[in-house]
Amino acid sequence: MTLFSELTEYKEIKETTITQGGSEDQQTKVTREVTERRVKRIDRQSPANPAKEELTDTLAPPAHAFIRGVSHINIGVADLPQAIEYYQRLFDVTPVRVFENFRNRGFARSAGFLDEPEQVSVSIAFVEIPGTDLTLELMQYHNPPAQNVVRAYKVNAVGGVRHIALKVDDIDRAFAHVKSLPENQLINASPEYRPFTIDPIQATEFRLYDAALEANEEEKAKVCRIVGNIRYFYFIDPNGVQWEFEQGHTDMGTEHTFNKDSA
Image (cartoon, rainbow, N blue to C red; front, side, top):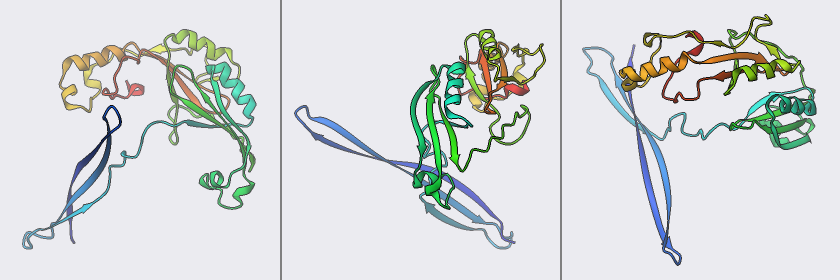
C-alpha cells in the first residue's frame, strides 16, 4: 500500500499598481492578492524503496478567504406583519426593506425550487436590531405554503444553530422585559429560573488557542475575572428561535476562546 504525507504551505503574492494623475497628482492603488497553495506529497512505500517527492502548485485560497462578514439571520415566520410587530416589541427593530408577495425565478432557484420556480411566492422583511450590526430576514412563504412547525429545542440538543446571543447592560431589566411578552418561553418554566452568575473558574479549566496568551498568567486571570461576572439566560421566541441575553462579556476580546456553558 502506498502511503502519502503532505506538507502544505500558503504564500500570499501582492501586486500593487500605482497610477498618478489629476491636478493634485493623486495616487490610486490597486492591489491584487493571490494565494498559492504549495503541496509536497511524499510517497512512503517502504524503507527499501526510497521516498519519492512530488511537488505541485495550485491556486487554492484558504477556505475563509472569500468571507467578508455577517449578512443576516433568516427566521421563517407564519405571518410577516405579526412577526415584524413582535420583534419591534422585543428588540425595537427598525424595518429596512419589505418585499411583499415576491416572485423571482433566480431567487426561487437559488432557494432550491428548481421545478416551476415562477410559482414560488414569498414575503420578506429585513429589520435591524438597534445597537448591533445584526439584521434579521423575516420570511413568510405563500407558495409553497409555510410549514408552521415550531419546535422548542433544549440547550443540549444537537443539530442546527442552538441560540443567538446578544449583549446587554442590564440583565435584570432584560429578563423582566422578555417575561412581559406572553409569546416568549423561558428555557425553564420554573418560577425560580432567572439569570444566574457563573461560578468562579480557575485558569486550569480552559485553554487559550494563542500560545503566548496561554502562557501569560495575567491574561488567564483576566478571563477568570470576566467569566466569573457573567450573567445570562435563555428564552425561545414564538418562531422557535432560541436567544441568549448576556451581561458581563463585553470586555473580553476575540482572542479569548472558552466554552462558557461548560464553565
